Image 1 (tube, rainbow, N blue to C red):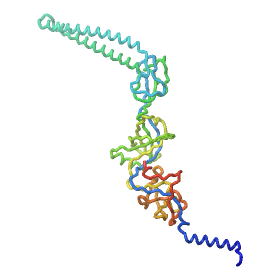
Image 2 (image 1 turned 120 degrees about the vertical axis):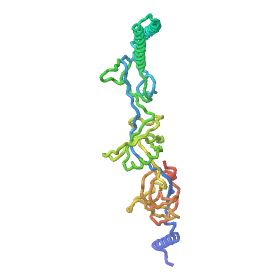
Image 3 (image 1 turned 45 degrees about the vertical axis):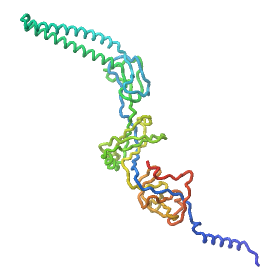
Image 4 (image 1 turned 120 degrees about the horizontal axis):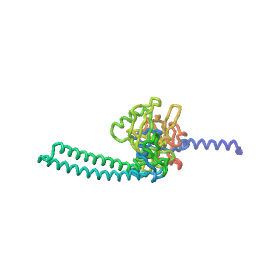
Length: 379
């Protein structure tokens, strides 16, 4: 029996491998993939934009009377409430004037009482023919003049008391103070040609966000506002890791900006936590409507080829190619158009290694890319 050479051994091994491949063709061609279910249902239509936080009200505090600042009750950057004392002006001169006017009022009231008694006395004497008509009319005129003098003095007292009230400068709105340029000892005048502002109060709650969206969204937004239902808006500042702040759309501009092709919108937000700050740039998410029967799949499942975008569906262990069109992205999900049934399994991991008609099998998702249900990512 002739000895086996190396060539003979190689030929025997090659024939054995080919026989094994022929015996198990399916096992040799099966590719492990990870899939995610297709979800068909209502999905919010989300419009993304960049916005700027704006205060709803900025109040400049100026004096309404002349006086020297005697007290500053607040500090720069402090949050204040409406009616909270800010500054106190020297009001001693007005207090002395008030005392003088109150004394004048007492004198005027005494004179008014005397003239009224005289008028009543002359009226009775005229009835008994002891006083002339002219003297009676003079008594009536004196009584009316004395009553008018009482009213004029009361008006002066009210004006002086108002000046005393203005000497206590208080916050007109809730908000945050800016820079305080004047301190104790400075004299302020109401009639200065260019009066210095004592303070500026910027309202921060509620707060507005202004943003622009392309004009192609205007018909959808107008239909949504026409229903009377509030339109939800979300805002997220850069670096803010918490959940987006929720607000409502309150304003749609009356015309489209022809230079940019956009429409300006405003939304109001409750800002109790102070997460939005005037002048800050934020990411805005507007949801004017909901698309019914939308097809939602994992965005990672969408592939781009020479014939356009497509996905691979695992159907009974066989890979099937389906052409799709991407409408928009919702988080890590894609809203698409195409022939995809609810519950179909689209390939997320391994899509680059398969083609139409090959066999594949499901495998668990990797730790770095866990499988997430499409419904859980819809915001």
